[in-house]
Each structure stands twice: as C-alpha cells, then as structure tokens.
Length: 445
Image (tube, rainbow, N blue to C red):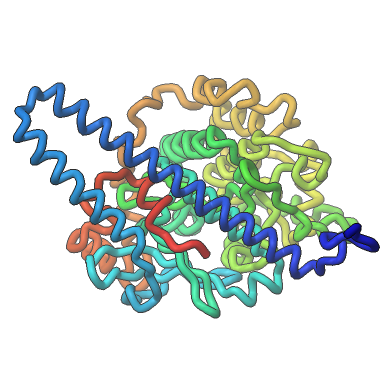
C-alpha cells in the first residue's frame, strides 16, 4: 500500500534522531573493534610462527609455545570483557580541579597500579554543551599510541559522571612550572619546545588538529618529558568541533590597550594573579588561540604552531604576548597581533629565539611548519638538538627543583607509590602493546 503524508524519517522527533545516531555510532564502533581485534590476533599469531621458525624450534617446543600463547590470548579476552566501576579503584588524593569535574590519584585494587582518574560531571557537560568535546577527547586518546600523548587505559560511567582512567604523570603541567619559575633559560626552553614540536607533529600525523595547545595541556612525566593532554577541542578524523563558546569575545567594548603600557614586571604579576582562575573557567583564555581560528573562515593544523610560539614567548618573557585584564581585551590583541606582538627591552632574549617566535606567530600562509615539521626542526634555534634521541635526555636537575615544590608532599607520595606499584604498567603477560590496552580494555561511555 502506498504511503501518504510525511515520511517516517521527517516525522521523527529530534530526540529520536539523536538516539538513532548514537545507536549507529555504537554499532559501528562495536563491529570496527571486533574486526580490529581479529586482525591483531592473527598478526600476533603470525609473528609468533615467524619467531619460532627463525629460532629453529623443535615441534614439541613449538607446541608448548603455541599453548602458552593461547593462554595469554584467553586471559587478554577475559580482561577485556571485565566491566570496571568506581568500586575497583581506591581514591588517594585530589590532584586537580576543572570546570567540569576533577582529577584524582587512584590505585586499582586488584593490581595496585596507580592512575589519574578524570571525573567529568554529566550534568555540567550537558548544560554547557560539551558532550561532543568530551567524546572527541576520548576518541583521540583511543586512536593515539604515541610517546607524546597521555595514555588512556580504561573508561566507564555511572548515572552522574564519566570516568577516564589515564596514565599518571607526577610532574604536573607546564603552567605550574612557569608559575613557579617565572621564566626559563633558553636551553630549557629549547628542550621543552623541541619536545612539544614532536608531540604536536605526532597528532598531526594522525590527522588531528589540537586547537587548544597551552601550558595547562603540556603535562610532564617523572623525568620532565612532555606529554600532550586535553583533546576536548581537537578536530580531525571523525568530526568538526565548534568554537561558539568564543563567540562573545568579538562583541567586547573598544580597548585602548592600556595593559600593553605596563612594564614587564607588572604584566607578569597581573598574569600570574589571574592565571589559575582562567584555568578553571569554562571559557578559558584566548591567549594561545591563533587569529584564524577566531575568524571562523577556515584554518588548518598550522594554528597549533601559532600556539606553540605564544608558549615559547611566555617561557622566555614570563607572560604571553597578548595577556590582558579580560578575555575580551586579549581577543582584540590577538586579532591586532601585528601591533601588539612586541618584545620588552628589559627582558632580553636572543635573536634566534625572537626570530622563531615571529615565525610561529605570523600569517598562517607564511608560518613555519607549512611545508612540514622538518622546517621547524632545521631552525637555528634548535641547533644541537638530537631529534632522534631527545626523549632519552632528561632535565631532571631542573625538574627535581620544581616537583618538590608541590603542596602537601604530593609528588613524594606519588613517587613512592610509583616505585612500589610500577604505576600504570600493563600486565607483562598480555600479548598486546599499549594501544591494545587503550583501545580494547575499556567500557564505552
């Protein structure tokens, strides 16, 4: 019988359409994971057979090796099917708070491994329309298997919260380091900027643009090495994410840039006074955002290199180049960067450093890194950097002076737990890499 009137699709409510979309995504993820797991299992089996042939094992030895491998695979499947909950972790200490929740240091009860648990309140995320951003963060944490990205081991939820179980990094973040030290030397800056170059490039190679590169999101491990975090504004492989929550910035009142007339000491004091409050804000600070992102006429991965230039300026000068009393004033300074990007004479830096900052913070068409990351690596500021082995170098002397300044002896407690529990190390017997743990041993939120 012919149908009349509106089609079933057009008559569906928005709520139903959203549920249909969520079901589609869930099914796609489920079967995509099944296929990926099957391919990984076959790859591991082939690798085992190849190794046994190369070693020239006898048939009985091969049989024993295959039997042991099968037991490991079975144990791995059992662990993947385990549904975790809040009751599986013991909370040790709150180590951070943000606009949508907090981060706790936790210990898994059955293994003793120590993690950072990111707790996100569902009600706040729905109210602020941040669900898409949180899903984007989880997506990239699952996709990425990089030395330069914070690892996610598990995720689960209850009626009130979402929980992301992350790699614990006892070094805190770059924001705290800069607030403690005011400025870094050029040698220290070279190290951290070089590592951040590699970190940003690693996500660009995955097809992602971070869009929110700032000191708060540069975490430090126990040896002072950089890892990228907080991918809530990341855009790339799966979906585009919005910048509407910056929409009010272009409606600000005219500014005479009076903050620009302060000397560097007063600017640094004002910046440090407001910095922590800005970190907890749901809007955040536009200090590190490239002007083309605000214009909403299109941008690409080069916007992340602008942000890195702003961070480099802050490391050497003590505050970012566009800092102001209000986000509205900062926005105007960013958009008028040709007039407002200046270097205070009372804080001298080398011409090489100044040149690289200006190569990062310029029109996107002329920005360093446009032909590829090799252009950045070859810049004279990075002379002497061993790009192949930089992750083995440690700024432990600098870093140890910083981490022990944390309040309440948090780092001392964490490092003790770190040594006792082999923090966040995967079970040795599992026949998978870190990606398998991140991608498979989780419950879908």
